Image (cartoon, rainbow, N blue to C red):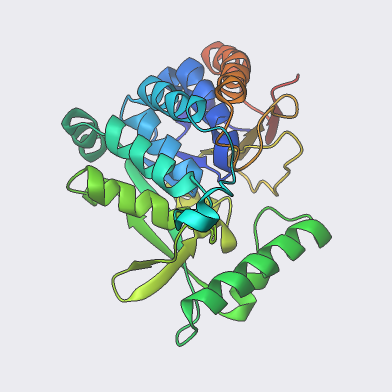
Length: 289
């Protein structure tokens, strides 16, 4: 059991556009939480920063404008023109740059530490080969073993690295960090941090609980209604109440973005009631209850 008043850490799992559910949930229940630290990965890192920086609504509105102007997730017309086939990188980065203000950066520096997970490929591997092998291993493991916390890439030599978002000096640095944690070629270009190539942190752990659970009671925000993770003592995992209406990399539907956010708000209302009641939370909180 977990005393909701004692929550010391929060984990924002990865999940692409499904993480708009986390944003809606936080809008309704985040006021009841005072974590000392946050662990995040991939799109979960973007929404952790937006939530703790007070910019959730700004991100929602900016991304909806971009999706409304984007007719497809694959731009085949660019084959001849030489432009990008996928709009994701430009839309993702543009949203971060538009919504990151000096006030938000100050809030991140003054608030809980936000740890962002990246994946480094094995030393000596060509970036394109490392991206292909890592993504195939992750996808196969997800399908065969049905694990959201990958282990096969770790066995192949991929390494996790944590970087704190509050160390970013400006919007460009924050965008670099979040995009590096979300880097999934070919939807994203190959990226580097320092001298090493980086890939989506979910390749090595889509739910980085151990990074903060040692601080005390921990709340985990998942992003799929059927996700289940082992919950050691002191950890509560919350999942969506029903299948979310949006796919991982769906950047072409403002309606599905809004519907996912709204479902998060409805589920967040239930979580907020549980937190405000002061009753101990079970080890795995299903917001359908």
